[in-house]
Image (cartoon, rainbow, N blue to C red; front, side, top):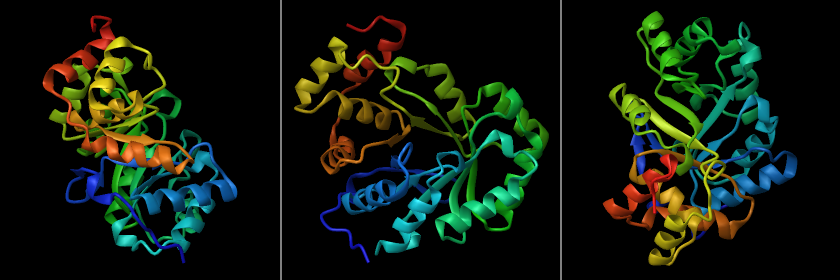
Length: 269
């Protein structure tokens, strides 16, 4: 068994996912597979991560499951997210059963529709997601890469909003009106690839990072947390994993947050 030591679980804030505490910093497993993925998840758990993010499309659920079987962290303390790809419409239950078997668990904490199927809301799939939650196979359900119009279409058809919308989100993607609209619907915004669209050499980020004695990567994570945005970070290296976790200890001022917010529209200095 793999026992966690020296972890920093206490640093990570959580969001109320309709009665379930969702860690706001999670470990993303894409594109790792096989033993590399298993070892990375074990290291992440030892470092203090409790949210592990995978997906059917990542083809690593079995490797993640191997790590979950080896760790001494109780299942009740873990938050496991997986996702159904859009080409599995009509095969929702089969897809979920395959995920549960690969992960070696009776339930997942969060099941997401990975992309809008064919650019449509995917109402029939959403009804199957609701049914799976009602049967206790998943604790919460959500979507990934959805627009507000598509989210509202799911609600209009079923009366159910997603608990989470995961999408690319960082200073370069910041849209205050979109984030506010999700909050009004009680939807947690979850950021994947928070660095992808961000100019990591931006003077504002560099200056703020220097002022906190940290790196730009950590400032971007801290900025997301300030806005209540969950962040999925990816690294197979323990030092980077730890730095991402300790981002939660960076207390950005309102002025610093405003400067980072303004990066998206090119007005930050």
